[in-house]
Length: 202
Image (cartoon, rainbow, N blue to C red; front, side, top):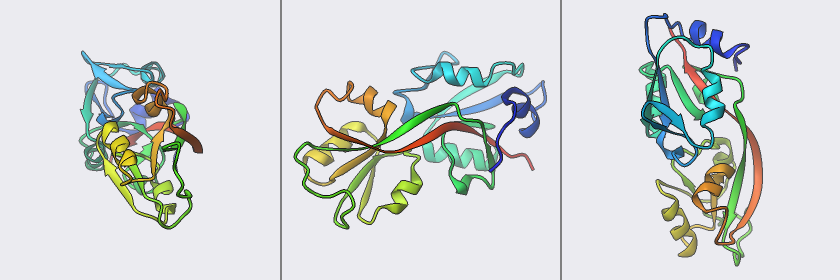
């Protein structure tokens, strides 16, 4: 897994970008609660951290909001140069290079207060927001898992017993839940570095 020694230099050299070109940056739309695009600039809780990534890059930058699955596809195809916010997944290393950590994020397991199913039980059912980057966590689960596109859908599945646990990043959870105003049970299950990927040029 390659890591960047210098973000500004690495973006130019590793991505093979000429100064006359535009750096195309894909932003996962599922993470709009923490980082999104407004009038050609990043906004949200993570915006300042990611803006620092591009400090010193003189090439024009064009941000494009994309669904997570399409963002990964575009990185693979080379039609976007940079994708964020992303964590390391081994399957991506063949077509993109991971940058230095930008922030750290806790991955949470959320459940209703009266939940009686054990998290490790084979019968435990998990729901996660589309774009959830903890693929290794999902692969470790023995029970069923369901993907939804909206926070409200995930909560409804918990309330109706269709899922026992929700997997979500801490920052996204705090934004969408109004800092857990509903009093859900929350456990930290993993801490991961959040970064960005730069598409490899062949």
